[in-house]
Image 1 (cartoon, each protein chain N blue to C red):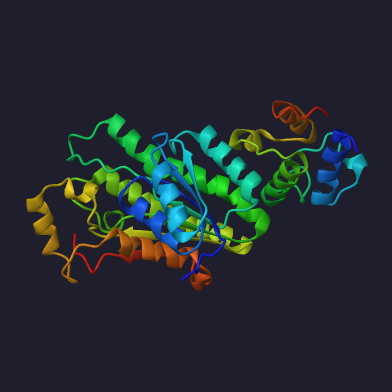
Image 2 (cartoon, helix red, strand yellow; image 1 turned 180 degrees about the vertical axis):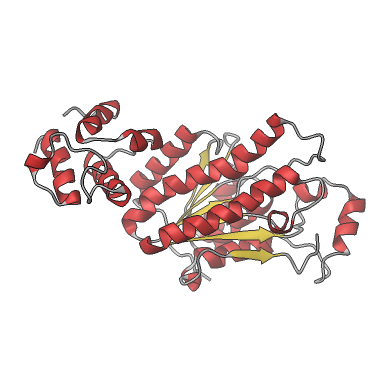
Length: 248
Length: 78
């Protein structure tokens, strides 16, 4: 399978969980991937392994998505090295829970800086390259709780709801330039982040998933491959739930 | 072609105006330089001088003269 062959992609938050799997699937499908993580050197080994395994070009980039200057430098480098950007996956995100009455400003700022403001910034930067080539696919990671809400996650769910809203708006604005913008709204996905809520709560959530299992990072990565590929060339402004019919 | 000639060309070609209309030209001062024309003009300038303008500068780019000042920040001397 090579449905992303030679497409140039930028994926944020590649060091673990869903982002790591999206990187893997994009490499498997033949994309040239600029993979972003915060910790210097943390992707070097996996990038080398994926390059050798699939013959794809994987270029690690290290910056915090909140650092607008470094994000800009990254896009300038992509323009110089590859001359284009076909796919942007805004995957990097943070999840911090707090009950109403215990939500302070730093918590709000932390979550919105990464989950919303950095996403807007990355879209604006990607637009610069994609608007010139009159094509592109932007994939944002929303969440089932951004659509349905969830007790204890007012700020996180608000940030993911914002991602859904900005996805729809940017899709309308960028469609005339043949730039598609979609979001994936994962349900309960079996990652370290999800498991951190505790085994008892995991079991409780499991009983609320009609398909009978937690989602896997591969389930989300496959959706990202589809939205990044030309198979979805007429799909934009959509929030694709990948949740096994979960109830929150 | 000098940098000033290149700068002028981005305006005349993107906005479809002549060089003698450039002095005193302001954003939204003519119908072609609306918000859509602005983004096209920014793209043309970025391509011409191989730069990537910051969002603050794109917003601040309010006139033909102001654009010259902004370009200095990117080491483009006109």
